[in-house]
Amino acid sequence: MKKLFLDTNIIVDLIADRKPFSKYAIQIFQKAELKEIELFTSSHSIATTHYLLKKYLAEKELREVLYNLLDYVTVVAVDVDILKKGLRSNHKDFEDSIQILCASSIEKVDCIVTRNTKDFKTSEIPAFNPDEILSI
Image 1 (cartoon, helix red, strand yellow):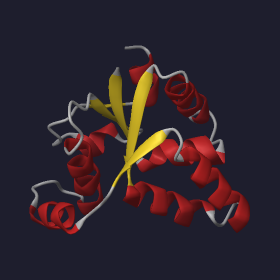
Image 2 (tube, rainbow, N blue to C red):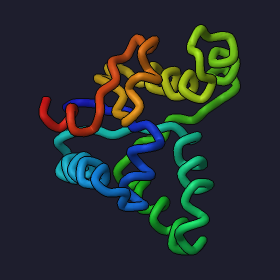
Image 3 (cartoon, rainbow, N blue to C red):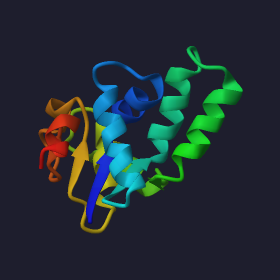
């Protein structure tokens, strides 16, 4: 089974139904629901998604949506080790370094799924756009 690490933008696309991107996020989560793939993300992504979407969804609704999302995604904790490694890494963007390091902590992870693949050029884990990963 493929193991996919989701960047924050994929989760935001799903919950906010950001068209045309949400259709790919929906398909990815449908595959997870069918147990065809295994999904991971960072605790940072969950918190950032909440922060970004609280302007658009009622607090109670947003919390419920995020709570239910956790049935389909394994969350990798951002701990002090990841933060220290991220701060010392050669990745240009600190936030992206956190995502890369969280993905790296997953045994046999296949890839990072993001709409910002250019931000992950220095990642040792390949990064794909959601439409690309669905065609693989």
